[in-house]
Image: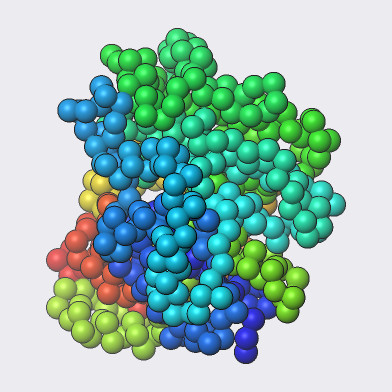
Length: 581
């Protein structure tokens, strides 16, 4: 079979997607295989897996890379083409100069100065093409390039291609010198109608604040978002007022920043100096929500188009996505799952498909179980090779879902390893740690002995589709199976799900679980409901702090051995640590 199209993202959280006959059939990030969180660099291990298990190189019609500029190639070359972990802390020694500790980030921010030089360097272009051809094992004529934000926009395309018209908003730190775009989609045509230069990047603001709060820019922005509700407007308003003077939406519906990126850290540092950390988080979150709402509202009103789709790293901010849903008049709304740069691989694969006259109509993806899978034999071999019987009691229950449900009802915490791995940043049940969502003591147990999470960060619920109305307010406004948006919760949710919602603002970032997408996980939650009356479980990713989510059975055993986890449901087997019996 032919008609295989690859989309390749080689930036932070490098990823490969495969589209076959118009359908997304595989998507996985390199971090899962090389075990480097947010791995940056060419995703060679993932591509090797694809060639061995899905399609050989001769069956690939094209491989589309997620950006056009040569700076991505130079970035990899600077690191000797080896994978590395993306994310940058602020160095106290140089923060007053407005610089980040890592020269890579400053190098990235300053590239606009040399843009005209590199983009016209034909020898460098030839050198890069030779590298891409070698890395992909494809002839140069099968290598394609597309603009970064176009890849973000095309990632949502199959889900809105049947809408009469739609606006697609993309927003991140930077990609191909751009930080935001607005596009109109009508049928199979995507028309760019507005873009913002990266020197006016809202994403830079959020990342800079993340670094100034002592966290890792490019990775820990979600922690700032989780911290924000612990403040309130009366405490953060003075900070917010100063931030509003630095970046705004102008009369043409475009982001405008008062300062260039190289001065941003210094300016923001002077504003938040001696301010409480929760108030700083509250201010930057309020600013982002406010500006995104203004931006989307401007363009929906200007164009008269009320169907909206969003993608790009800033839209990983699930609270901002909720505010858009609540405050912008829309008929339809789609938030791209795992909307950061890993999803550009999907957009690139879709775009490559559309460029081929042989391609069929694109099919919307449904569930996100798009990664690798391991057979029961693989699991059994790893149990033997890891000599787990020395450390664990191993059972094979008649019904693994019922056994896990009983443990959860008894307030035990259980790791679940089953089926195909999920794509993206959210664990959706197959590589998850599960617990009783009504037991608040669960939070301390998971944080202290398993995940080492920041104390203020909330957990999330996986909810049976039939139980969504019991727990989630206005759930019917948007389909919510991907954990991409928060909702207000009902009074019942605050009883049944009190350990799986935000302790401060009582919102939840739910996974609506459908039986047809994951029958075994649906059965597990249904069995738990029979025992407790609760149609949901607490769900968090199955990993150690600072590591990617588990991929292989070996990763699962490694995480068990190095954490306080007691139970592991792996395939049809149930493991229990012997020393705790």
